[in-house]
Amino acid sequence: MTNRIPTRKKAILAIIVVLALAGIVLLACWIIQNKENPDLTAAFIEEHMTNDNGTIATYLKPAASENPDIVAGREALSESLGLWMQTAVVSGNRARFDDSVQLLTTYFLNQEQEPYIQWKLRPDGQSEVTTNALGDDLRILDALLKAFNRWGEEEYLQLAKRIGSALLAVQTEGYLVDYHDFARDESAAALSLVYVDLSALREMHNNGILSSQDYERYRNLLAHMPSDGVFYPKTFHIGTGQYEYDASVNLIDQLIVGIHLAEMNHPPTDLIAFLKGEFRQHQRLAGRYTRESRKPDADYESPAVYGLAIILALQTNDLPWAQQLHERMLQFRDQDPAYPGGYVFDGNTHAFDNLFPLLAETLFEQSK
Image (cartoon, rainbow, N blue to C red; front, side):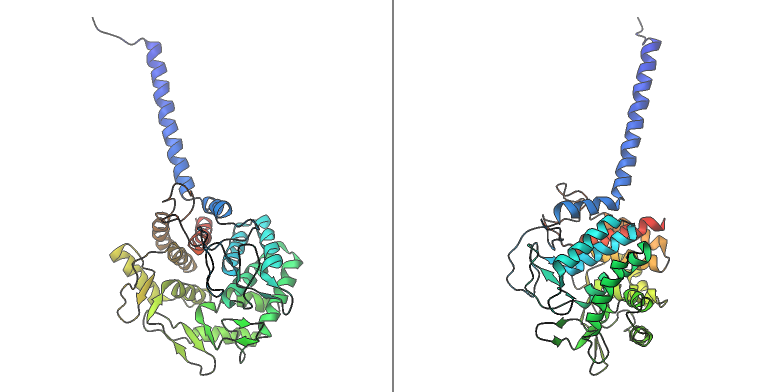
C-alpha cells in the first residue's frame, strides 16, 4: 500500500519550507548588512574602548604607564578624539560631536596658559604632559570648522580660533612644527610631512585663522616635496630647508601624506601604483616597507592601513580599488566573538586600528 501525504499536510509543509527559506534569506541579508555596518565599530568603541569619563582608551587592555612620553593601556590620545570628531561630522551625528567638544574642553584643553591641546591623558582625565601634537590639533581643528560649516554653531568657530591662535603663536621661523612644550617654551626643529593637513589648513584659511601667505607656504611645501619614485620623505627640517627620508617606511604616514596630496589635486600616482601592485601580487599590504628594496619590513597588517588606503582611493575616485580594500579590511573585524564590531587580536587592539577603519567605512558607505 502506497503512503500518501494528505493535500492539507503538503500545503503546511510547503509553507514551512517557504518560511524557513525566507528566514535563511533574511538572516543572510542581516549578516551582510551588519558586516558592512560602520555603526557596529562605533558601538564597539563606545562599549569597550571608552573610559568612565568618556575619553577613548588607546588600548583595550589596561597597562601601567612607565613613561609619560609613551602611551600605555587605557590612556587617551588627542589623536583618537580628533578621529572620533571627524567621523561624527561626516556621519552627521551632532550629539556625538557635541559630546566630543565637551571632552575636548573639559579634559584635553589646557587653559592655564595658552589654550593648547594636551596630546595624552591618564585614564582618569588628568595629564602629565605639557606638549601638543600638531597632527592631532589640526585634525581637531578640521572637525570643528567643518562642524561649524555644517551646523552653524558659533561655539565651534570660536573654539577653533582660540586653538589655532595658540598654535600660530609658537611657530618656528614661520612654520608650525611637530610639537611645542608650553611649560618649557621649547619647540621641535622639524615638521613631519604627515602633519601638513591640507584640509585643516584650508579650513583655517577660509575661516580667517591662517593667512593666504601661510596657506600657500604649506601647499608649496607638499607640491615641491621630493619622492624617491614611490615613497615620500618623513620630515622637513625648518632650519636647513631639507627633506629627510626614513629607511623603514611607515605606510600609515605615506598614506596620510598621499591623502593630503590628493586633497590639493596632486594624487600620489606612483605610491598608488606601488600599493596596487603589492595588493595584486600578495593580496595584502604590509605595515612597513624598506625604502630601498621596496620589500615589507614588517609581517603585520594593520586595519588602519586599509582604512587610510580606502580614504585615498575615495579621494581619487577609484571606487573599484576602494571596494577591494574594503573587503580586505572587513576580514580583520569580528575575529574575537567577545568584541563584535571591533578589530581585536589576541584580546587587545589600538584605538586607531578601529577609528581609521570607522572613518573609512563611513565615507565608503556614503560613496555608494
